[in-house]
Length: 510
Image (cartoon, rainbow, N blue to C red; front, side):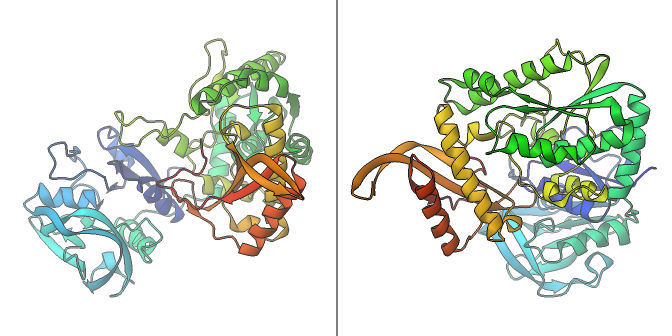
């Protein structure tokens, strides 16, 4: 089945992925491409959105998209940088704003137009720009203003082209979803039929056609992505899927046995491999985060290859790659999205692993993966699991890794995570974990002076991990958790709570 598609051209905005996700929440399929790598088959797309950007259109280095075949020929929505680009290079004027326009604002004027249907004066929007449109482009018609930004929204007459200087994709724009629906469904006439059930049916059929009667091997992690990928493949090829769950010695406390038990109830063909010693040996005396990631990735491939070679006739390697992995692994020179850290799911396979790759989730964001899993009837506890980094606790132990440090952090993490569950807070947190800091601090226990480890607790709320805010956990909970950790975990005498947001910090510390 062919779905109507939206093309999103990325100019480097931190919110570009949010645009794609908001579009998909309308059950409309969207794709992100760098502004300078526009797909040649434009007929595949029924509408186009231009993203924001940290760049100024007044700069000599301004990004210039090739809009031939798009502008005036397809419904076009230009957001922030896109809106300023259309104005600046089409007869209007963009100038530096007298006041930097960031944060919440409210619409003070709303024109009667289908684009703004069901959006009223006073609606809150989110601004994020230092330039502003002083004069509209040729044939531009004003559609909305805020108290500080006269040309907050406009359209170009004789075209299906709309432009806004605010961000409808962020939650702070209270009617942002309505605006996107107005543009895509009411104006561009796209059909909202991109649903989890449709994805499952089409993906299973596609996997059957692609793989046939071949055998597939998949490395399970216990997380949502690999588990949902496994279930899609299981639906498609049944016993021809072979799953391997490797214990790298850096999992949460008891996670290896607990996850294997959980998989038994899913009908999957799973083999558990305990390679803890091999991973810890490879990590000995390594402190640099990227060195630790690379060591873990290398050993995982070695262990996985050893196990895969024991299977006869395997031709495919399945991976739980999701769409943000693909986007974030495009370099800043190949496209505006910057690489924050290396991804173990994209590329990196050695030449000796002569397997073809299949990635059932490559088109999906994390929240879509969960919805697809739910549509297949998967256990809600598994689907609700917090994200856990591929390198495991190795990047939550700052500095070098030792078995004793792993033990300490596993115990601390268990107290924290179990405490969140017991207090009914686990599902209110997007991701939580503990970090073992590379410092000792002085403490007093009984009448004795101690000199032991400090741990930091981290809990964030997010939708996709691209941005995140720290969770305001109750003081009583933090107090009890701190007491439990210090009393129950030998080697820790101090607990702190991380109250940094992303950006500027990241969710993980390494």
